[in-house]
Image 1: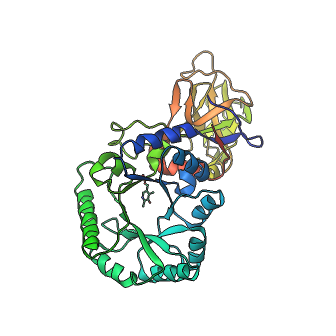
Image 2 (image 1 turned 135 degrees about the vertical axis):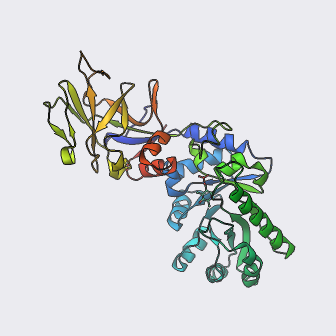
Image 3 (image 1 turned 90 degrees about the horizontal axis):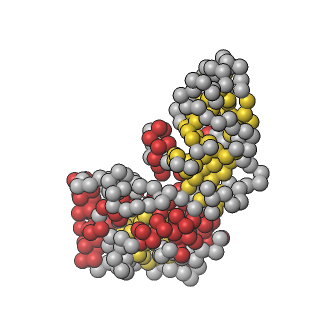
Length: 386
Ligand SMILES: *Cc1c(COP(=O)(O)O)cnc(C)c1O
């Protein structure tokens, strides 16, 4: 297990394998034809993996551009010295426009009020405000409707402070094969791009494929693909798994802060909903909880790995700590385990010996997707890069 420098002040941390990030980036880049650019989504602090470190790793592996969700995320990258193009995947409040201009963060644009205010500000700074036009082809989230794109461009193109550097849409069902709704979105998008070109508009880089689209729909790579989850080594859906092999970059680890043998019948954690059932059951504590991304809905339903074996988490997960049980009964334990001691290493996500707990396993237990699992673990724990 690659344990180089764990945090000195806390026995719970997130381990990020930047080699895996580079490997995944190269694997995705290898799906693209020569000349097709790769935009890497590093929003939400790189899906919880650390945006700055991941951006650098992805760049070294062939990434061309980066995408963030908020102004603050873009500013963080710029302050860390990142000079490559950054697209914000949304419009911003008008009050944030000077920051976008100052830090050279391209917004996505879908209202003329915002676009013109952005152009005004850029012109006032003697700059050209590059933006990407967002088209809503069926996800009903953001964007100009396909039938309105040409009029939209005509309503803003007079402004000398504006330059369209890209035109994009986002798919709602790119992770499903042979999906009719996906085809409809793709048709609407390519139709809108053609209409813009026919009307003489410079559309900049045309892009629509996210990770599942990049893997399953190469015919829609266009000028650029926008990958996220795959770069971090997770599959966006079961359909993509057979097509590309990816290496998960995140592990979550902790060390045991306390381990005791409570008397039979003693309860564990808020509500005492777990009671020690038999003698020789050890209850051990680790210092991470729901404020670290370990959802409380997992209470009593998830495993952790210790000494290369699974142990059941027991009692309600607290804000900053949780407990697990190890049955060391030498006679009739069904899952007999070696006793744990203070300082022993515990794996919440990742490998320990032959055992592994994946973000997908945890997502399934939580009733969510792997994206949310890694984002959540990025909230408070220190990240250690290996
Ligand atoms: C997050 C996001 C992506 C990346 O999606 P993945 O499924 O993680 O590859 C691409 N485009 C937009 C607009 C996004 O919001």
